[in-house]
Image 1 (cartoon, helix red, strand yellow):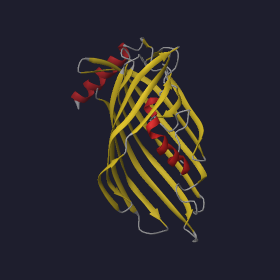
Image 2: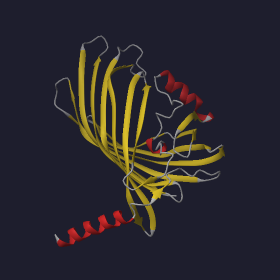
Image 3: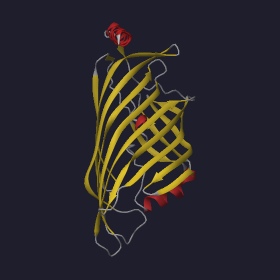
Image 4: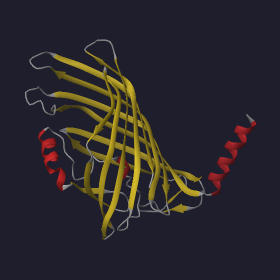
Length: 285
């Protein structure tokens, strides 16, 4: 008990000692810079279907995310992104999958030092894939709502001190549904790992899709499905101020999903679910 009390007191003193410092949080993109991250996702929970016995879900997925800065013009970087080495395994609604491989994804986007993403473009070699996805209702939009959130930190322009906070909002449409997301971030202090100094950013995230019509991809004859979703959770990010890049980020949260659909020629049925989610992103190169 005494050891724990001393540890907490020391940690508070460390945070207080740097409370007067300020930090310019920005992505430092320079031509030729490459960054590689490993992302891991773990999701577990259950779904209920038409009043039947709940079905469990327990899945894991991982992939490598690599970005390379192609050029910087007027402070805005052109970045080439690839997601490779996808692996998926787990039990999803009663069906078991093990080490399922998923095709790689390649695209480009523009990014400001504050992390604002725009002009998302799928690579030429995947134009056919993109056309097929669009035909099924999926798309990569130009304002980046469908790319990884870690690429959209939206840092404030002004320097931040320990204890300062800033908000992020996203209000758009995705697959015909209204998507509203917001996050409140706080710069909480410095952390030293293997002799390297980082600043820690804590975030509270809340994303909601009110009950909206969703056209089922690939099922042209199916009736419209109504979907509602709510995701809430906390994110913890270690940011390297000197290098201008994220070192590590984790997210833990809960997803609640409600879906009302109709079978081909049948009656409407309801599906509900609640899942715990954890995402870990670690810079590896």
